[in-house]
Image 1 (spheres, one colour):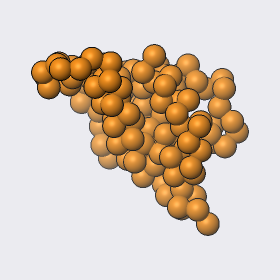
Image 2 (cartoon, helix red, strand yellow):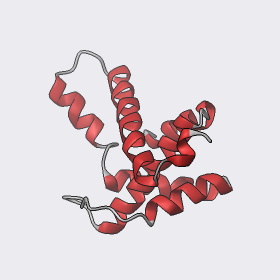
Image 3 (cartoon, helix red, strand yellow):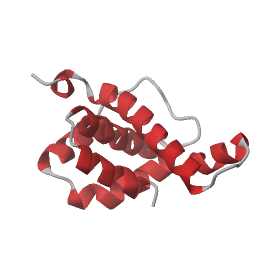
Image 4 (cartoon, helix red, strand yellow):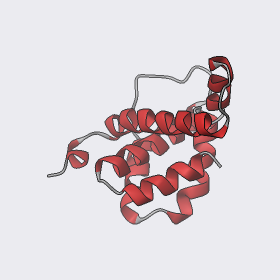
Length: 123
């Protein structure tokens, strides 16, 4: 059994959040160099929030495989004790689903597909 098969969707989202954030930060650093750290943070915030991640998920949904769709569905339907501070519940659940997909792709070593999804998330 692969590790991603034994993890909950929320655990996949936990990892996916970190991977997505690291990707976004690298993207921002490469895009513009020699900015103040506050400016980097402001640029990264555009992509690392529930509203944006929900929009990305809605954009990619029609192109997901059956297995990816299943991960997304399970993550979106997961019960979390954590509540989003500045976003409604639907946005938060869809953002969690996007993060779970990223975590799943990373752990299942689908690097080409992961890169594809991450590029879409900063476009």
